[in-house]
Length: 171
Image 1: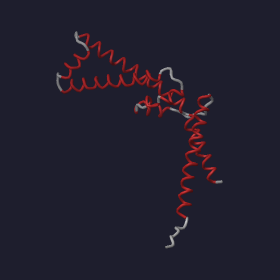
Image 2: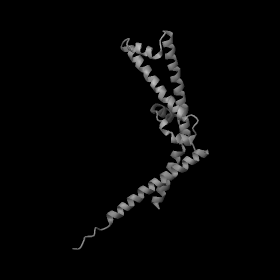
Image 3: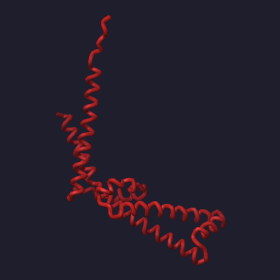
Image 4: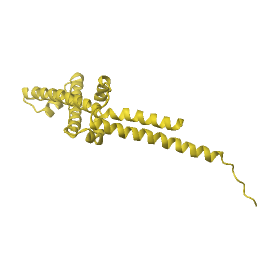
C-alpha cells in the first residue's frame, strides 16, 4: 500500500513537472527571439562601422585584430557575438512555428545556458489549462509512476533473490 502511494506521488510529481514544459518553452522562445534581435542589431552596427571606413566586415575584423591588444580583444568579442548570433538564430529558426509537442521533439534547440537561466528566473509555474498542458501532465504522471514502480519492482526482486537460501548440491 505504501509503495502504491509512493508510485502515485511520483506520478503526480512527474505530471506537475512535465505539465510546465509548454509554457516554459514558450517563455524560453520569447527570450531567444529577444537575444537574436539584439545580436542582429549589434552585428548590423559592426557592418555599418566597417562600411563607414570602406571595408567589409571580415576585413574590418582582421584589421582590428592587428591594431594591438585592446583592439584584438574587441575584434574577438565581435567575432564571438557573431558566432552566438548564428547559433541562436539557427535555434530560433528551428523552433519558430513549432507547437509544444514539436518543441519537445526539438528540445536540443532549447539549450542556451544564459537564456535558460534567465527564463527560469522569471518563470512562475501554473496549473495548465490547455490540451498541451494536460497531455504533458499525463505523460509526466505515467513516466513518474512507471519509473518508481519499475525501481521498486527491481529492488523487490533483488531482496527476494538475496533472501533465498543457497542450496548446496549433494554429491
